Image (cartoon, rainbow, N blue to C red):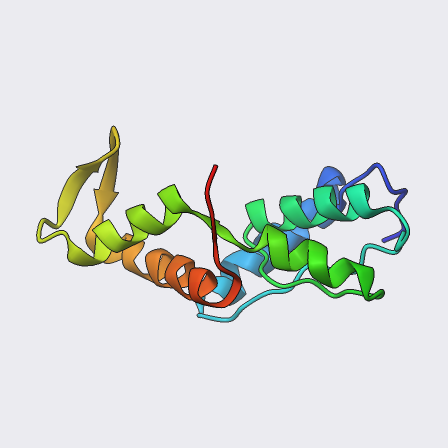
Length: 129
């Protein structure tokens, strides 16, 4: 779908619905789903915004078309120290359901997400905010 550099693919009703269904089916079956091309390769900030939105929506990895996009993704895919610590707590907490920084954490359903966070930290590193 053609869009300008100020719009996300998720801003369009039809594509948002289709992508949501696609993510639900394929991610639910254990497949990774990659974000699409951001064609404005000279717009580094737009690429960062677009890739951040992809990550927020559950897409991990990105189809890139220019070498200057690699460094941006490598930085974006770093995890925060808080994300890393929470992932480790999910692994090492003996309780099935527990309070994690004022929110409920459920070991069984959150373990796959925690595994992804730890893998990202090992590959891309940890950033402290």
